[in-house]
Amino acid sequence: MTPPIEVLPALAHRISPVLGDVGGLGALMRALPPILTGGFECRLSGASRQVDLQLCLLREDRLAARLEPALRAALHQLAPPGATPDRLDGLLADWRTTTPLVEIWLEFDPVPGGFLPSVFLGFPPTRPDEDPASAMGDVAARLTGRQPDRLMRLVTALRAAVPGAFPSHLGLMLGRPGGGMRLNIKRLQGDMIVPTLEAIGWPGDLTEAAMLGRALLAVSDRMTLTVDLDPERGVLPAIGFECAAGPRPPHPPLALTTVLGLADVERRSAAEAWPCRLSPDDIPWPAELIRADLLAPDAGQSVLTLGISHIKVTRDAGGQMAAKAYLWFGHGREGLPPRVSSDWETPDGLPILERTRRYFRQMTTAYLHHLGTTFRAYQLGSDGDVRRSNLAWAQRAGLVPGMRVLDAGCGVGGPAMDLARDIGAEVWGLTLMPDQAALGRRLVMRAGLSDRVRLVAGDYHHPPWPDGFFDAVVFFESSNHTDDPAALFRAMHRILRPGGILYISDCFTRPAETLDAGGRAFVDRFDRVNADRTRTLSQTAAALRQAGFEGVSTADLTGMVSTRRWTRAYVHEAGPVPVTTGLGGLYLFPDHAAGPSPVFCGEARAVKPHARS
Image (cartoon, rainbow, N blue to C red; front, side, top):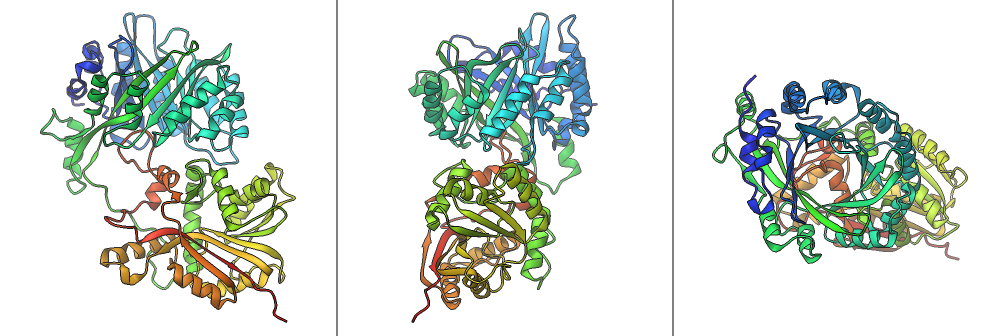
């Protein structure tokens, strides 16, 4: 094996002395192999100048996988006398084949006589009908030698009380006095902070924690809540908020630490100077990246990217606050390889329903893992709380308690369940995919909603209900899987009662005459990727009138909706470099280069007229 190159020291010495002293990391970095995803933890508050090194092992990182045997040997070399990291060694030997983990972070804590890593285990999002507690308990027991029953009960209670919360990482403080655990909880919005802390039995001041969390969330793209657990005492009163924002300065969470008095301007400026992109001209280039470039010369030159992963604000048991900056580094290439077409995109003349079936055969599992039970790109009235967004869409559609509603194109029934719970509607769902309907019925049963939500499989061009059965029909980003919208809307007209509402919120295109060649190509690509036939608002309105509806109105909702939840679902959350998830690998395609997007979120509504005497 090529001897470890001095790339980690080269990265460390790019850290401004204002942020800390990296001299204590010298022996550590020289002993470690050049794993090129990780970061440096720098204190923004207090007098301590300690800088900690973190390394990240990503499941999909082949470079890290090749270096893991050297890493395991280094862990034994770095351990103090009498401390043998045998359990961690065993996990690192086979974690890719024996666990569901998506990543492992090692944070090297100095101890007398050497270094011992604390371990942060990254878990994948689970399906709505799965409990992540068992997987977390299994890996924790493997590393600690004891079953973490308290942790497992806590995670199960959290999932039951706040379904939108995602317990993403479990920290095991192997290198710290007293050990202990840390739980990271992602995808929180302001109104989810208090229910989350209540669900896990956090003993601190809920009002103070919510105020701090909402202030940080207001300036962050995403926020992670961290809480510490003691095996005997349970959840401890200290709390942390990890706040991430875009890679370009100014960095709003970092700026807020200055306003809160947690970081001075000099430290803030030093942290903001860290992000950049490095090439072989800037630092000694790792042999592994040279090898990768030689083996794949057409894939783009390898690069190292530096960014601010997140800013962490902590509040201890006495109310004292502090802040840290996590300076991230990772390797990648100049430009992503072209996305491979999927089997629903390429066949010319394939009927739209068959394209849709092929699409959901491949996409449903990825949607469940990364989006949960609501398969929607656009959120309204919320930037992460799916249930609140579904309620806002229902209110915009004009749904009221007691209505009998059809969710046409319902997926596994996430929105349908929310309509029943929060609106008090009686909801039927219709999906093209029998496996979606079957899973949805199990979820409905678990939710105790079987008397108010019924899901069936079938073609929505031929709905299996009698004339005038529904008070309202809604299409939540599902109306474009048709070649004949007028025929589809006639089918909905038939099953609506006189005065019944039809509501669509979906993707629409701008008129073809307003698009240049790039815009038209974007629309074509969008339709191929999504198995859609996207139309303009005016074309949709015309099809509704042709089907016999009156009171037709349309609106462009650009500026009212958010797609950040959708974007987060196909880009990995760990750092500032876009790393696609399993969903992103199936879905991601280049964004429109400039100007208004040719595809946007809009709505259409219409009413079935009463019979004229």
